[in-house]
Image (spheres, rainbow, N blue to C red):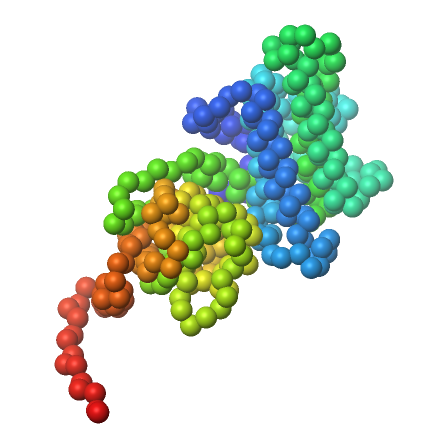
Length: 347
């Protein structure tokens, strides 16, 4: 996507995406914001400067994308609550007359950088707590809504709620600034992820082979290492090729790459965490198969075919050998395989 998009562009994209989202309930949308905040906090906790002994969790681009998701999901919440996102930002800045109409997102980012010199807290972890604080306020506003809780005492005005949403956006920008992130790149990554419907559950049929989304053209044959929620930890390194089979690969899948030869997931799309990493590394990976963890048993030989996105369950060593042969023939660009006579073993 091109850079330096207007802020209005993201608000318009939210309007379009709402037609494909399964839930327009404000309370649910706010829970999604909380979920993205939790993801950003986990990235921060696992960063080497904060916790040198923590295991790897995602990549810097994943970190940027999680912050982009906080902003986008906050815009979703504003949309379903009939709020004007720009007005929310104006109120949070304390300048109702500020106009960014037709301006670039970079103007907001530059404004935040200008305010940074006046802020007394510059530690990124504490800035993330400020984001959590204002999300907590938004939750309180939502709970006190008479449409949700008719018996609740008054605890808000529309203006206060709009300012709270603006504060979430601004403090997320502060956090990104202190972390040295490219906020617009994170927003664009989050937007691509939503357009790819990576959040949707994928269902599949058939037990002999599974069809998914191939990340690249790489193929591999090996023994399945079934770990649906990445609780077992990476397998021990051995001569046997292992292929990770997971429900959905969370950012901690990074620690598995040195221990397996390929990855298969039930859910996910072309822009999910594991797909991005596998694509960068030229690593065999097929996502979105629907039910790989249900039909593939641990230790079963499987064949990942990157050319057509299929995962074949092999039931014998002979089939295992045939799959390797087919893989080699694919590399010959359609040429007929040459048959060699078997040499007799010397007794």
